[in-house]
Amino acid sequence: MRRPIRLFSIFRKTLREQSRDLWLLALSLVAAPFFVVLYWLLFVGGSTAYGVLVLNADRGAVLADGTVFSAGDELVAGLEKVTYASGSPLLRVGRASDLESAKATLANRDAALLLVLPEDFSRGILAFREATSGGGGAPVGGSDGPSGLPAAPTVTFIGDLTSAAYAVSSVLTLATLDEYLQAATGQTRPVELAEEPLGASGVRTEFETYVPGLLILSVTLLIFLAAMTVAREVETGAVRRLRVTPMTSFDLLAGISLNQVLVGVTAVLLTFGTAYLFGFRSQGPLWVAILVGAVTTLSVVGLGLVVAAFSRGVTDAFVIGNFPLIFLMFFSGAIYPLPRTALFTLGGHAVAIYDFIPATHAVVALNKVLTLGAGLGQVAYELIALVALSAVYFAAGVWLFQRRHLRRS
Image (tube, rainbow, N blue to C red):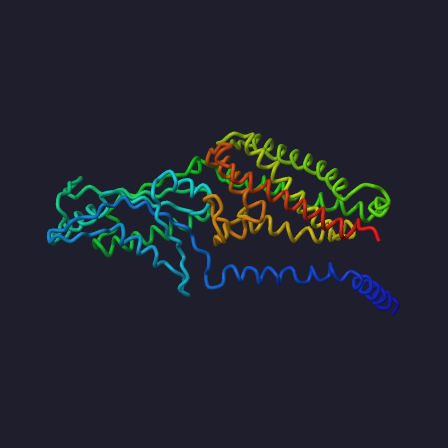
């Protein structure tokens, strides 16, 4: 009889103590429902549209009756009709003006795939249809390939072969291409297909494809250490004693932040070193990748300061820190790609809502350097964005900490 009474007493005691910390209780209860709502807003109606660029060099074909047949334009129109059951676009189709700018767009992850249609695309399709069916309407000119069939035009797929978005978009594009060719010629794929990997993405091992994400993880975990280090100063009462000194919140937080940045850079170096021992090699300058990691550390520490501003102790910092960590990992593209809806354009770069998460720029920059072989100049935009976000989050952390913990009554 005594055991149930003791258990009930402990239950009531725990309940009373928990009721004094409703903030943490509420965060624990609403976390999963919040992300359910967030994901519903992101994906309702099938809103993920995979970016496909088309470099259409097709010159069309003049038929015997003088009309012009443009298979390239017809294929693009077919790609634009690839939708979800709700009617939302599944492929976000854009036209590329030249090869180099299109590859830059792929590197920035503003598109997943580049489809290159050759000059003789239309002529090849019509010539193949004429050769196999014996029908009329053949294009003017043409050349034969082996077995008396016309030479097949080559359609090229270009993209980052390590990207999940490329895998999805290439399957959808290939299916649309096959469907169009079947309808146009009555034959299965009367073209040659070529796949061109972006950078060194075609020779990466499975292990190497995971390393950039692990580097992001090594940095983002710093949010706990930064937040808990500052929160410990609050919990031990050190912050209350500082109120009677000339020290400002900037002095306190800047000193702690310098220490955390040093820890973060060490974590990046250790992660790189470990990956190197197991065979990972960077395609671009390694020091640029380390610089990206160091600057990302600044922004993560800034977020840690914001977390600490809302924390009354180490436990609070640990619980609250999970929320920005989820955003840093799941909404930055570090784990899997998310739909990008541009809010505005800045300096020729499309800015989406996820671009306000520092890890988003780190993911793009590290992929450029480690996989695509980019140098400092090619990741300048991402570095500038990371520095700007670091300044914003640090300033917000200082201001919030000052108001919540260092304000003199």
